[in-house]
Length: 256
Image 1: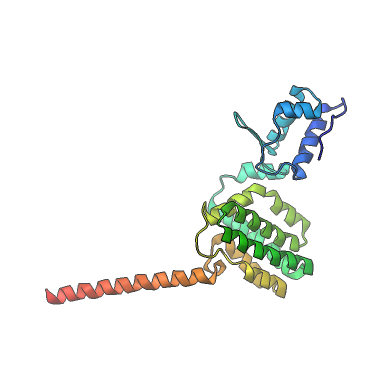
Image 2: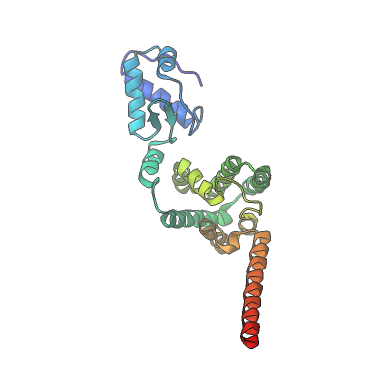
């Protein structure tokens, strides 16, 4: 999308509108650095003060993040997303998990009732992409695909308000998912979303809601069978060590 020289009336408002369009259209993605002030002055054909005022207005609304010595970065794609970022960036993990659980379970229940074949095809394709992203070992790539998966479940609910609300969580959602997977991908399989997709495909709203509700809490039911087996084997080994320690203690008492 090309920036154009605005009319001379209401210059600041027009510049704000153009910069906002660059952000909301995805031309400038969340996390990216926007052109420098001199570049914007040249491309827009307006004074430096006009550009500066527009950038400050968008930063005040939460769309941009001005970092001294580094540049200006896109923080959110809408004013609501910007407000959410400022308000909930330091929220407790428990509160975050509860909100995610409520939103995602509601969307999953609706998706099971309203999904189309196109929705199902999108979800199945994203399951494959999640597996590929996990196998790559690239945490940021996996977070991006997993975010897209959750947004696809929201879209399958065909509730525009719910979908927009979840989408406005924006980079907060990506941050939550980063916390789920950590800075490095673990060797075991990630949480398996196949049961969630299967429930949506079967039209089982209650089961879909239950599956989606537990993922934010990293519940055992949301983990892959391989991980459950490894955890069980680890527990059994620990119990065997404790039993052996008790037998050793008994032998020492007898010999004493």
